Amino acid sequence: MKLAAAHDTVTLPLPAAIRLRSAADRRLVDAGLEIDASPVAGMRKPVRLGRVPSGVWVAHVLPGTGARVANDATTWGASATPYRFAVDDAWGRFLPLRLSAALPFRGAVRWAGWSGWTDARRGQARPILLPGADPATIPDYLPLFPGPGWKPEPGLADVRAQLAIRETGGALRNAGWAVATVGLGGTTIGLGVADGEGRLVVAFPYPALPDQTPAEAAQGRPLIAWSVSVQVHCGELAVGLAAGGVPELQSILAQLDSPPLRALATIVGAQAPLPDQQLVLGRTLVLRTEISAGKPSSSLFLKSP
Image (cartoon, rainbow, N blue to C red; front, side):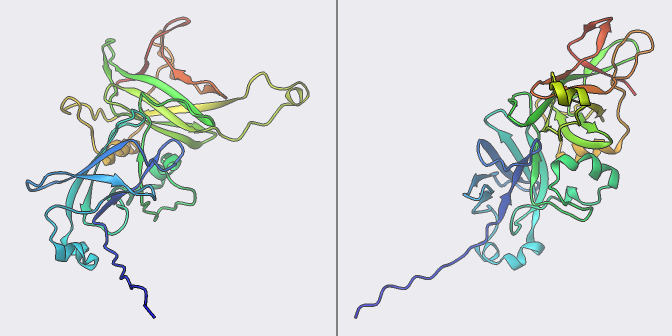
């Protein structure tokens, strides 16, 4: 009797892995990305990560890591060194992402920037955290924020603006890399980031349908709408950045710890702040400041602090 050949199974740990989720709806982003990890120190070349069937992006080899260390994950904590991740979307849906993390690391990177958040920032960042996340939760993913090339998707609201900071004398400058929240009844339901030119997109699932009035219940509703508030936090991260530069995620989200700038409904008279806005089901909400009665500008002006 001839016995079948026996095969050994060898499992090798992966030294670099990152999981990305859309900030719009927290779905995994498993296609269309270009991801490189570069050592912060030294002259080693970046390593390109590729996608595996689980939707995680991984590198099978980390240049500069010897075979003995690479095959023994128990030593990684002591041997890990800082790497800078650069995530770019070749399909134009999401803003570029930059962050630092230590490699090699067993499993998907758990970004240190998630720790130490105040309760206030946790509340504002609720849309990019999975349900049930508490103050001690360190997610095993990073968010990708919709950019100007984002296309509206069924079931998701779409709020847009060209953000500009307005000086007292009327001079304007782009509010590059500002972060904005959309709130409903005191709860943050959307979180978005502007690109380097101040172009903002906030996408998020529509909230539960508002209650119907008796008349609407009898006759139907002409439209479904919610009254939402918008706040913009801007630390002017674009200042000092090289052309095309991208700030790290930690700096972007840290803007939430500062008071929001006053978004202007109009530049006429006392420059009233932007009131709550009507978010209508199936329509993009575009935020603009009026430059005269009934004449909106192409931008949402933020009052210079």
